[in-house]
Length: 78
Image (cartoon, rainbow, N blue to C red; front, side, top):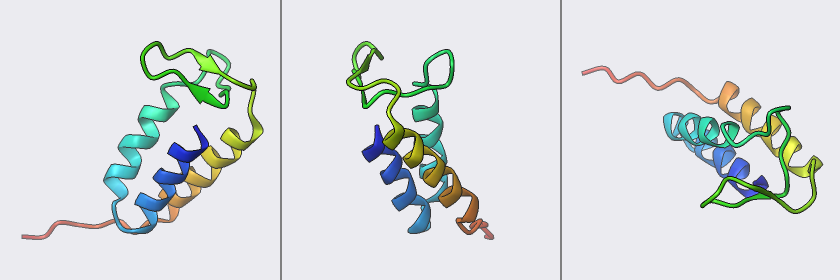
């Protein structure tokens, strides 16, 4: 989970804001009913694996959200 949120940060900071937002939303959809995350999520079942709740995952989520917030808005002018 943290690695996926770090990818969101990288996408946002390299100008791929739309991709970052899409991945961020997909990751947010994996939250538990209380909005918590484990270390890992089984991609086939969506089951939370490892330590729960995982602080590193939550810190990476916040950093990803801030990276998206700070990413420049790219307008496509034709």
